[in-house]
Length: 121
Length: 110
Image (cartoon, each protein chain N blue to C red):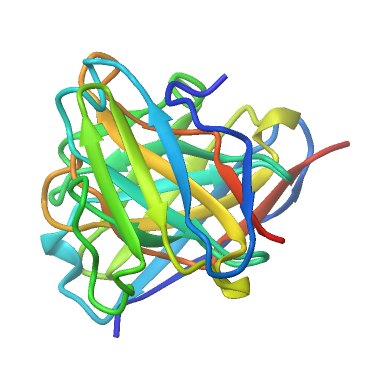
């Protein structure tokens, strides 16, 4: 059974940093592209970032470029999102999502339960 | 403002049919596959339709998808109270090199 378990969320002050983790199990993690998608309170889904199977290619939404870094450790079956210079508008539930194969142009076939990030003073 | 446009809400009585439209452009829906996601209240999104019109295992055939040009449609027949949820369309945007989602449509069973 595919499982994606996010962690690392919490309350952080504006301008602060946070690192999210997504522990994957139930599939060969190194064979799938991965992504982060967020959802602000009461709002819709917003794609944040994606990473190739090797980690050599990364993609970011304009809202995340220059502030967020996505990475993966295939030996630990874990996906990460390093978030710096956080703003109030980054407040959201952050979901880890698995692509159906190696290509990031395809769909998300599994989603984690999410971790809440709150940016506030 | 979402790149893909969906109606904010649709509603119908139990047993009826609803359709949800998703409008985009040639850089996303027009040249890439569309997928749909169902988000029940308080839960994570779940894949409902992929590759425009395919259903994952376990998704009932009451749910269907179609695509024409730069628009896609999700259909739900035999509406049930358990179908009350938010529904999102999504696609890769080649010009933006980014995934884009619709703003979401809330389905209400009257």
